[in-house]
Image 1 (tube, rainbow, N blue to C red):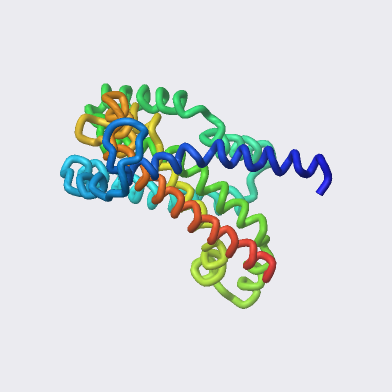
Image 2 (image 1 turned 90 degrees about the vertical axis):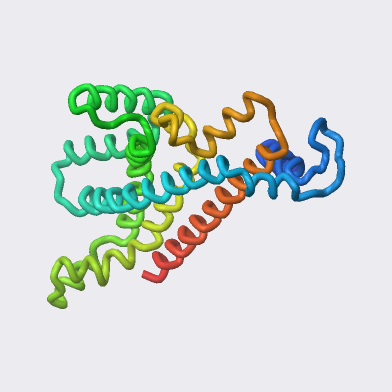
Length: 270
């Protein structure tokens, strides 16, 4: 190994430590018997036990799960439909470029700008119709608006890898569009759809900015609860809760990576 390779390896290790040491320290403090300070007081799971016996935290966790599952389901359906329509329909070139830009816009737009825009939109709708009081419904709509883009881009990339030859072969064998969609296209899009869905679920689970701007008094989620609790002081229960959220997020990313690997394998087979 030459000098340049050793420097690159050292920088890579330092980056990994910079990213993961803080998260590991939270996990360590979540099983530390010492409640105050940085001293190690022994191993304990009492903070997790207190966490699971806290009815308010359980309610907040349920809100978070409902928000993530419902918004992911809606965005997966809409994002998959948008990707198929954008890729398969013969759009004019200029309009196609415009639609591509619109599809990428939620991905590159800062969360704070997106959140403020949603608040203004909900305020205008509420002023006209009297609907859309801030709460879980507005949070679901807010999450769906940015999740759709991530799902659509994941499915769109899968469509580009698949091409049109398999669909044309299905049509040559007298399959209608509905049968081709059910038996050919959607099964081949499965890894891309699942990867997009898991990405959307992870983003919803960890989102703070958009949730903060669109939440109501009865629709607190785990990121909002952790933020409010940290402002009052970090407790071992917060360490335990943060560790659980981190574990769920890492698990979701690992599942997403599994489907991405399956997608690459299926592409090579095709």
